[in-house]
Length: 94
Image (cartoon, rainbow, N blue to C red):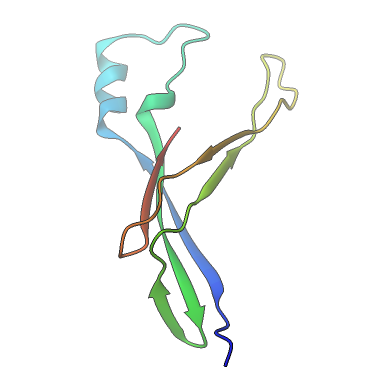
């Protein structure tokens, strides 16, 4: 009997508290990156019928679109998360 599993992904945007502290402490100049202060967290589940089971060891791919200074679309940036824990939780910092 084959096990059928469809993946169910629940993303949540996470703005770390250090972002607010950094904004108050210093002004951000043009070209300065905030990549270490923003993250994406979520849960990855395996859905079997109406039952959701956390998927341990899965990796989430987060892709962000970029734009240049004139507003034209640039290359996409892709980040892979660490493997999910036993509860299906992941955190990917951008």
